[in-house]
Image (cartoon, rainbow, N blue to C red; front, side):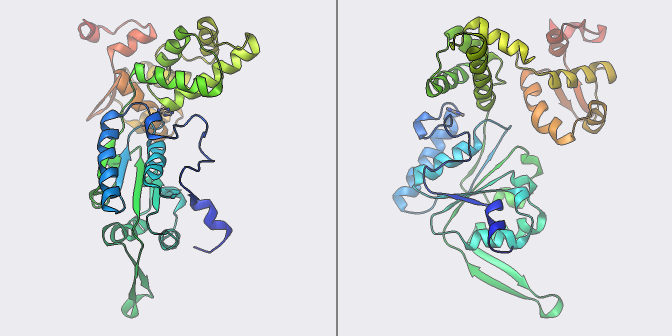
Length: 345
Ligand code: ADE
């Protein structure tokens, strides 16, 4: 990679606690502010404490799970807990081997490197990462053919934290190098989402009725990022159409206007279900065909729509493709096909 301005676009370095690019005000800034994912937090707390006591960097850790559940937030909190600077980049931003070499050689001891969307690293770059993770060694091949040589550089002690929405796309050599653990973030409980909304409302300094919190949480797809987005839309509505307080009626009206239904489905989710039902007879249908018939990207279906529809039990994945379930028919208010009549009993 060339030096200078280009570097800024592939990696940004933040001192402990510094956080300008994220939806900064609503993100938890301390370990205790982070609601939910209790089992992961407990395990991480032990790893952090052990690393601190031994005065060693934390081992490399991989987070996976649907978007918006707090993988990046956890990485920032870990850096803060370790008193380390975090350097943030992403799989698609690291195009060439030289890009990664530059990032790695610019690390200072104890730094945390966070690679988001690590499943999108290209193979050549990934291979440079193996020795870097395993033995802090940067192996660069110089020249070609018989005269090629390997230049080996020592790297400072560092921790790689990585996140992906698509763990299955990671090669097993890469997965196996996360010696500090691989953690799957889960969808949040209704109670935890309600706590997050109450906390965010307090930060935004907006009054919200308890019933409105419940209503918003129900429609937040069990996902903090969605909860915070909907809260802000309801605050806008309350400011423009009401007296600034998010009431039960106001939040209901705002969410209806956004066409978000009582399970958090948006028009695009419903389009997927309707395509499955009306165009593909309820399935099974392959994701490629479904993508073509809904004019969506395959990745968007797999990463955005499917995880939550699966979580709700509205679709299932079978070896022959996606199938819609009786619960989806019921939710959409459609009559059950006769072949499904028993499944809802
Ligand atoms: N905002 C986004 N994710 C959060 C979480 N897990 N806890 C508290 N606030 C959040």
